[in-house]
Length: 138
Image (cartoon, rainbow, N blue to C red):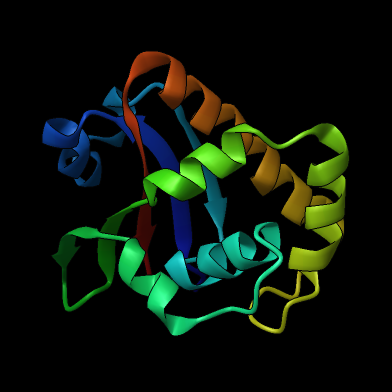
């Protein structure tokens, strides 16, 4: 069984509702296989910095159920801003770098799909004054 990884945008006061009523969140993308750990690695690559465990603390946990099998984290505002500014060339470059990390191990095309989804949602969140969240379920 894999890890479900949905990215969505919401207001803070409604974000935890995704766990029970995801269909009410129209602006979302559904993926598999990543958690805040892998997203923090992507962020490190974006910043051209070595990964640091302290980045994990920037992904605030809003919800944790079933002994951690279901969680919702908010993406750090700085990461959302960084993602929203990526160009097509940067996305292509990041995709190949992120895909080969030991924790991810995906084909670059799969990593690119996720990054493109993140960019689309972060731009929409910025336009609408909302935030970006990650829902995981094991």
